Length: 388
Ligand code: GLY
Figure (spheres, rainbow, N blue to C red):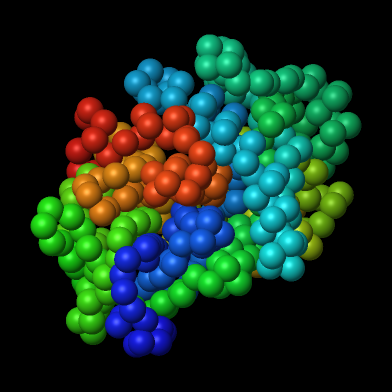
C-alpha cells in the first residue's frame, strides 16, 4: 500500500509502471537508477506472477532456433534483440546481487538439447539449419561426450547445444528486483488495481486506482502481462498461454549440470536442491491451476530423460500465464503520447527484461539508443489485438 501523500505530489518527472513482473520491475529499477521518480503498481505481489512461475530461462539460442516460427517476419530482429538482452545479463546480475545482497543463481553454461529418437534427430537438424541462417552459435555432442557432460541423462543419440544460453533463479530475481528497486527509491504499491488511464489534451497523464484516487504522471509504462488495464489500446491485450511446471528435490549428480532443453521437457537445476521441469503450452487458458494429467505427463517426461528421478517425488506443481501478443513478439515503445509499452515477453519475459528496460530508458531520454528494440514498436504492421 502507498502513502496517500504521494498523490498530492507534482506528477512532473514521475513515471508510473503498471505491473510488477520481470519487465515492470526491471524498468522501475533502471529508471530509478537514472534519477527518475518511479511508482510501480502491482495488483498482487511484485515478482509474484509469471516471473515467479517461470523457469528462469535465458535462452536466446534455443528459443530462436527451436521455438520461433521460422518464417516469422521479425525472426532476425528477435535474435538481435534477444542476444543483446543475453549480453546485458552478466552486468545486470552483478549489480542486482550487489544492491539486493541476494544470490541470483545466474549462469551461462549453455543449454543442451538431447536427441533420443530419429524424429528428434530430424528436428535437431532443422534447428541447426535455422540457427545457422539466423547467425546463432551452436555446438554438438556425440553420445560419449554427452554422457560425460551429463551422466544422469538417459542414453541418447547425441545432442545439439546453444553455448550462450543460460538461466537465473527466477524467484530470487523477483525478490532481488523488488528490494533493489525499493533501494533506489521506487514506491511499490501492492494489492491495488489500475481501473483506468487518465488522458488530457491528447496524452496519457496518469492512472486511476481501484479506490478511485487519480495518480498523475509524465509517462505511464504498461507492463501488466496478461492483466487487463481498462482504457489501454487493443494492441496491448495479451493472450494468456498457460504453462504448468513441476519441481523435484534433487541435487547433483542426479540434477543436470546444464539446462536441458529436450523437445518434450526442459529441466533446470536451481540453487540448492530445486530441480524445475516444464512446461505445458496452453494458448488461451487463463485459469492458473494445474491438472493431474498434465502434471503426470511432465513427471513421466522428466523421469524418462533422467532415470535417477524415478523414485524422487514431485515436491511442487504450479502454473503461470505467458503474455503473448497477436504476432508473438514483444511490444516496446510509445503506444500513444505519455503511454509506453513494455510487454509481450511471452516465452522470454525474463530474458528480455533488461533490454526492454534499456529501450524504455532510451525512450525517456535517460539511456543510450536501443535500435534493436525499434522493430517491436506497438505501431508495427500486422500487430492487432491478441485473442483472449
Ligand atoms: N521459456 C520457457 C517457457 O516459456 O516455458
